[in-house]
Image (tube, rainbow, N blue to C red; front, side):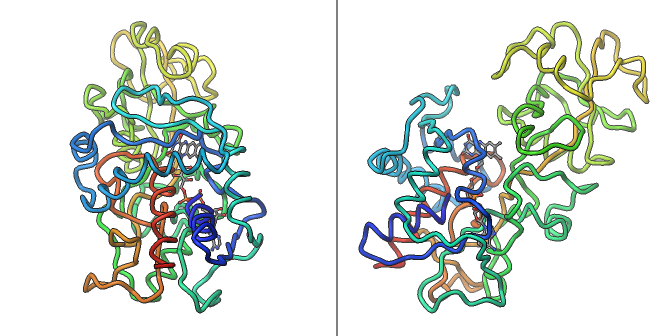
Length: 355
Ligand SMILES: Cc1cc2nc3c(=O)[nH]c(=O)nc-3n(C[C@H](O)[C@H](O)[C@H](O)COP(=O)(O)OP(=O)(O)OC[C@H]3O[C@@H](n4cnc5c(N)ncnc54)[C@H](O)[C@@H]3O)c2cc1C
């Protein structure tokens, strides 16, 4: 998304950008997403939810989002609803296919199957790194996130850290929170894009949460609304797995896509509590085996408030910009909309490049 936003904005400002797209289609993970582009209702809430993020960058995203949303609509991106369904946040839900088509049209020159790499210099002009994070490279995930076992990827198949590598090659500094990621605890089976939402088990806050050794490693009362803290903690358990154990009360809880009972019934890894490898707590009537999956990394390149990539001395690297999940330090310590970061920093990168 960030690259398309940068190109579309650059064209609007009179530039002649080209988008080098590794994939066979436009839209990256944006196309696979639920399309909800959001921010916290007030900045203090953003700071409280993502306390370890870079406040200057958070300000840029927070302040720039409403204008960015209006811009998307002005380009013709189709709105599904102006509700996020979360009282803490405000934003707009777009149809992901319509959003992708709109941005690809506005970006103009998108060249498919043309990856940016450290060895291929694509341009002498300013370069905006927008490759969507490093979740697709198991080696980088192992180095920075350090999960207990390889994580399944719940994202487009092409984002494997090219932005990070190019940035490092050119002397970039990295943000804090390199071990953090946005993802979901999924039913512990192999899946493809069709399973990204259907297999997500987002009701850990109602479950008792155990690892394979039978240790209750996370207090369900402490699980955050996004459940990212639980997903990240699961990644560090044996096998990067967990068991969600549910009693009758938990099964009756309502979550986004139905009751917990309905989600559990549909989960391919639901298990009879009698068959668990450890003694479950009294009252457990259902169990689901989950594994942490990664959608995108939260740590990444360090940039300033103009989307310029910074070196270790905090100086901008000439002609190098970054946007979207290639940038670290925005939702550190919590969760914020990745689509919002892509939209705002993508637009900002274009404005900086053409200023
Ligand atoms: C199931 C699902 C639901 C989601 N729902 C939401 C939601 O409702 N709200 C929200 O805010 N976020 C959501 N997200 C997250 C959101 O999709 C991402 O945060 C967002 O797409 C990140 O934008 P980006 O531009 O950084 O990466 P992407 O949108 O993934 O774009 C990166 C692009 O870079 C390309 N690329 C990778 N490597 C190279 C290379 N070497 N050279 C050239 N091109 C390259 C990729 O092919 C891709 O097209 C969801 C994600 C998923 C998977």
